[in-house]
Image (cartoon, rainbow, N blue to C red; front, side, top):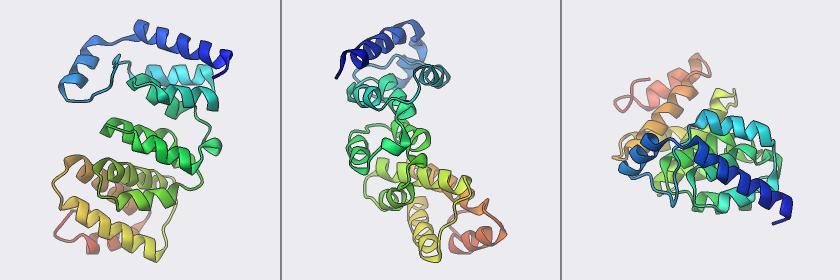
Length: 204
């Protein structure tokens, strides 16, 4: 890490103390949202910080290495999407421990990478709940941005969504339901296809 990046990292970590939200941090700890350090800084404050620092690959890499909630969220906000290589994505996703971070990674960064559809379908079919959540939330963003799937993609998505909606993981069910609704928003034909495929499973 060069000196400039190191100084920025130190400055960011100091600023978290000033923005600390004790009740939020405590509430997250009680719900089992575990990081080595969690300052409870609101997302809106982190977005402001991200806009001040701008896109910065080196700083993003160093922030992600910290086992601190706010550092990891900030990393997803300042990583330039065009520099987020698939192998880095795999490393980051392997290190995701919470539903919040899986969603942040998808919303803040991965919806903008050019290989987003590939990982969305891969992760949606994973056995691991956090990967499934990230996959469905990522695909939901792609649908919301107007990206349409081909017939094979639609069938695969609806099969995975049906399985997820009948599972017992609430985080995965919520992500799948959200994704189905974004799919239906693509148009009347999509809504009809979803309703037929998920009859008796989910009301579209």
